[in-house]
Image (tube, rainbow, N blue to C red; front, top):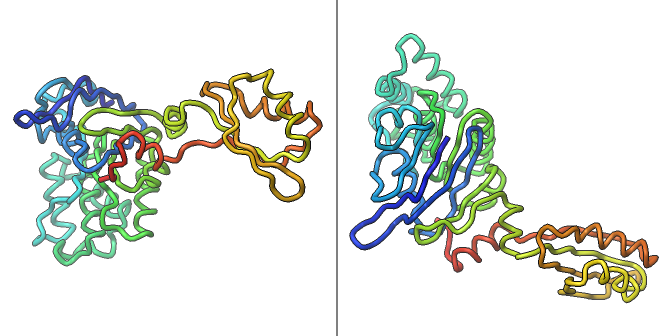
Length: 314
């Protein structure tokens, strides 16, 4: 649904975005992460035809960004600070947006009612926008971005200004939307991205650093697979059974714990290695009791820090 090839945006001699290539499939929620100044908002503005690319190409639904009017009909865009006419009430503003997007008059009112319900705006539909809280204004912006039933939603910090309950509601809404539409969203709340997105991409200094699921990014960050296990029994005999099967393993940590058990953290450089299965079979063969075992992975925060040299998310 969204495809970019070597997409770039240059200001003078400075690249805000450089050589960005990625693809977002139909019915997928893709997260866009990066520190302040990484190029996230610039990328979104190019994809929504607010900024022309300096280099490269991108397509929405098979249409080139150069065909901007047709692309805009396919896209619903929510900027970080949702624009609106503050002297209008919510109903009047959504009527205006519907007209601009060409929503037929016969179905416009029904569509507005649907978006008001979906975004939880029933209590404020006849209030002026300048009287609303920041969270409600954000909901109005989200309703406006979806009013023309776009195939693709591009959301820049969609939960900005929302309280914790509203964040959960919008998170569930995005997940539901992602079942039918293509969604590209940026957020500085990393657990939110992990909870909502099917995949994510991390950019830094305008360039793509990583793209994949959390598990795939974790493997890339760790450079291997890590298993944490608690064993009750002879650890030396256990290791003697494990090492012939996987000679490249490394014991990162070993510590005696209660009940005559030992906690070990074991790593193998091959991310496709079946380390957990090998640990289980070694415990059985050595007569040890495996009290606990889990595959460890780097957190999204760890991955973000590693790939962006410790920058703070925007």
